Length: 205
Ligand SMILES: C[S@@+](CC[C@H](N)C(=O)[O-])C[C@H]1O[C@@H](n2cnc3c(N)ncnc32)[C@H](O)[C@@H]1O
Image (cartoon, rainbow, N blue to C red; front, top):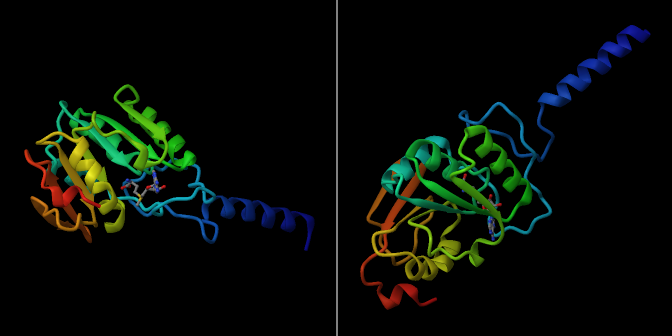
């Protein structure tokens, strides 16, 4: 192989490796995602559930179902790249808090919030979602699994106020019957409102 052929092979190799995902790396599958690239999630962090994004139109529909407005404080437990909280701020005028155990995702969410111009409305905390005090929240968004939702149910019912809302992507809450469910874009979404009187049976583990 001549020197010039070898160098063009090397140049193309570098260019292709920059655009092709490495085996095992998560890919951006959501067409609404920013064309900017962000650091991959940290595979060394011990998570209760893996990182999978809620499609942007499902995020928007869930916030609509929860009737989010500029009076609300939206908490996303396991906030990933921050899309629920950033969308709540940008499109609904709410304030928001994202709690995420993966430091790389927390950094990504903060960068996305800055680019979206909502840094003054949102906060991203690195930490365990089970340690968070929810008294300041008026809406909680979830994309976890049925078992984690059940573990969270007493905290949601005891720390939120009557009339506050909980929305969940693809996972129910056992015996706590949702006010509403919808199917869209291959997802099932659930809405609950905190009742005036919380039944004992729903707060016992
Ligand atoms: C299915 S993803 C949902 C991400 C985002 N809420 C969305 O819907 O696009 C679940 C997220 O929870 C995070 N996570 C898992 N266990 C956690 C824990 N114990 N505390 C906080 N975050 C956690 C994962 O890193 C991941 O980002």
